[in-house]
Image (cartoon, rainbow, N blue to C red):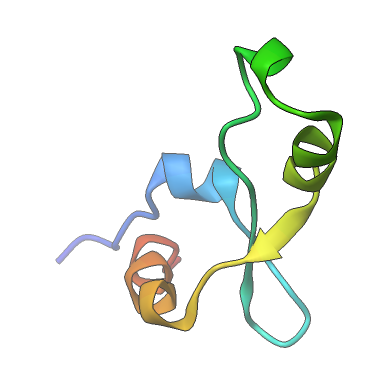
Length: 64
């Protein structure tokens, strides 16, 4: 049986924290920025953690 491959898109989008959680960037910051407020754009710059419910799904994608 061949080795399992990690999903290439998930490898590019998620980083593992020291405690094993997954870190991701927020969406909605690529275009049509003139309609969004400065405060909204500033908050979208920050990274956040993947929710606990979704974590299991992304762990499967990232198994190496």
